[in-house]
Image 1 (spheres, rainbow, N blue to C red):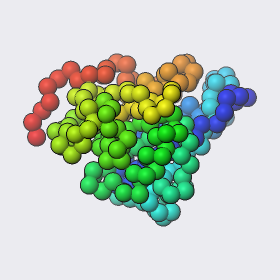
Image 2: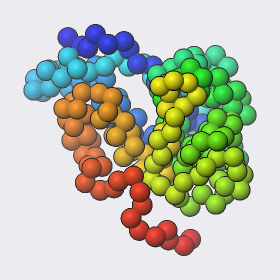
Image 3: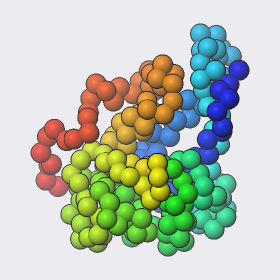
Length: 229
């Protein structure tokens, strides 16, 4: 029997994005009733976790309803466009694109969704994508560590931080914006979000299954100097 809590709707912006920036999505997916049920069918030890799993719906949002490119030469079929996607989602996850290729049509979506969606999570240059919409103006945020100088130049209204992740208040009561650095930072950030949102034991089992050990590797802040490129 699954949890009686309402189904979560998770919107994913991935157009021209780095595939690994969305790796944290699997942490959320592994906490879903569908995945827990699937695993329980061949390993009965997982059946007790059905009661604390969550029903989830994933919405893949892009410019058009046709297979959309992401790295490395992978095409994902969208379920919605920026024009018709719901604005009142539970979570929006944004991967990192070439900042110059962030679709302008997405900006209106993000502006409207930021007033209705409770949690927005970005990884890598996904923070610059969100910044381009104006949603991060006056807020603390981060992006890929190597892109921070560029971010400060192009989006000076954002308080850019040199941190692996930044958690900031959103645009309505209870809303939050979670921005992360490169893909590894994004995985750790989603793990942190999952731990405070879902059943702790379920999350640990999910992380174990993925062999993600964020608590054993990195915290919120960088521990080594930035390397020159």
